[in-house]
Length: 368
Image (cartoon, rainbow, N blue to C red; front, side, top):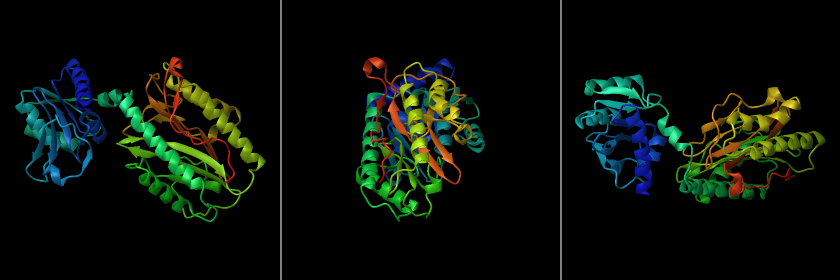
């Protein structure tokens, strides 16, 4: 994998050089991992004028390491635990003869930038912007493989839960059990806090589980994800507990299902992000649920659970092939509950079979 990370760093260096900077400092953890494979916690990556370095504070063998570091990348450890790697990296950049250093201003605090200027007063700091995040949007097949395995783990954990007794158990207990099953099946951990909503809590985006117990006739909505080798996927499903669904539950479920299918079918290379959102949102808008819809109907996933692109009404840009996204429309009716259906897919051209569905748990409205 060393050549993969080296190639990523080369692409970033080319962007920096085009912007007039001979060196760059990457401090955002997900971006460091993308370019270096892994690093001790809190480490930064210096793309130097003469040498690339990982810089961390304290002995690296005493700090937890995230991911598998590129062994070809030198590691520079500060002598004590209290040093700031970003400040040390700016000093190293100046020592290599760099006149300017591109930094991730959206991640570094003003205080850290001030300290960097104080140790390297002749070094001009410029804004790297979202350059690394933009490189991360399109995934290679190794990244997609990690997402695919994570999705398989999430599907397996959810499937096992559905085979157990649910009535009388609390949302909180079900969420904890799902997260345990994710780890049991090989996940690094949950991709985000697992959401379990029952009855009036169902269908609510980002709902934090409570001590409400599952009751017969409830909608049960579950949203979970697995992290595998740092890559995060997402799945959401809605079920009915213990009895045949009521007419209003069937009607609402069918509507959200149709919206989610329309969004999935719109995932083609070159499609405008806002058009994918519109495709998923249109049926729900026309049915009178505009006020009950989330701000977006999907987003990119990868080393973080919420990445670009965003599938939202005002979103800019178009989809490329090999971009993994979620499609997750939902409706929550206050006091009654609701439906959320959420899949992780990879944008693929029609010649390759169209969008690749990673999360395959059934979307049939099951009575559990």
